[in-house]
Length: 216
Image (cartoon, rainbow, N blue to C red):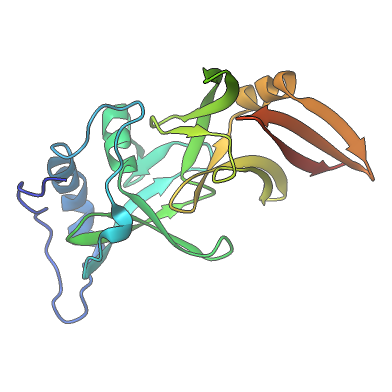
């Protein structure tokens, strides 16, 4: 991936490799946008940078929140430019465990910590596609990621504020929340079974069976 464009113009503190919130809040949106816009391809099925190979020394914070409903907010205002959200989503990065996760926007030169209320992706579309005579279930996020239901991208139930919610692995250990519309479509595609006070949804994808279980 080309890195020939100029680095984001963000002031740093050389003593502890951290930036102040006030400085970053003013500079981060424009500088990150300028840095990233030359380094991504098309939206649907686009190439994701090799974030796992980037080890930036500069660490800061950014007043950006990904809401539990999938909306992106910056400095208290919803980001209305979908192209900007799509752009930033390509450099989403997670560190830590499911119980104690830290999320960042990451480039080769720095990573900016952001807040994620639940999970960073929202699944808004599901399709059944034919691959070499085998049907595969395909999910698409609101930011253009394409994910197939397989062993690397399993479905699972989780809890957010006391509510059971369905998720799927997307990338780099980050999950996507299935929208209600997508979940209803999956119910039509799969088979519901009940056993021991639990309801399971069985789905066929890529020649294998996958299940998602909910306690009644």
